[in-house]
Amino acid sequence: MAIGCSDVVNTLEGLLNSAGYVIHNGNAETGATVQDESGPEWWFTWAAPGMADCESGPTCSISLEALASAVQHWLANASIPLHLND
Image 1 (spheres, helix red, strand yellow):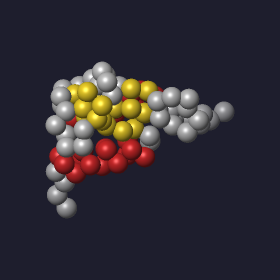
Image 2 (cartoon, helix red, strand yellow; image 1 turned 30 degrees about the vertical axis):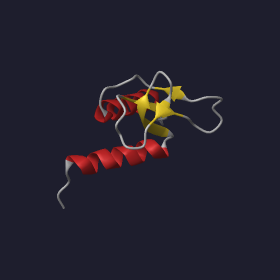
Image 3 (cartoon, helix red, strand yellow; image 1 turned 60 degrees about the vertical axis):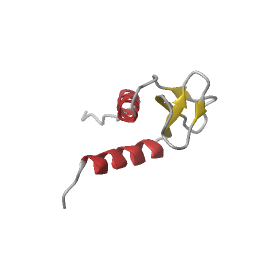
Image 4 (cartoon, helix red, strand yellow; image 1 turned 90 degrees about the vertical axis):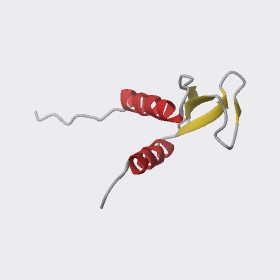
C-alpha cells in the first residue's frame, strides 16, 4: 500500500481532532473563520473536557504550518507515565 503526504496529513488531523485540536482559517485577530479556506491566516485551538477555556496556537500563513504547530503543542504537552522497575 502506497502512502502519500495527504494520507499523513489526514491521519495527523484525525489524531489531533481526537485530542481536542481544531485547525481554523480566517482572521485570527477577530476570530472570524471562513469555510472555503480563503482566509489569510491559520491557527489551532485546543480544548479538553473540564477546561474553562481553549488554548490558541500562533497565527500562521499556511495550513501546514498551523498543523505543525498543533503537533508540536500536542507532543510538548503529552505525558507518558514511566513504569520503573524497583
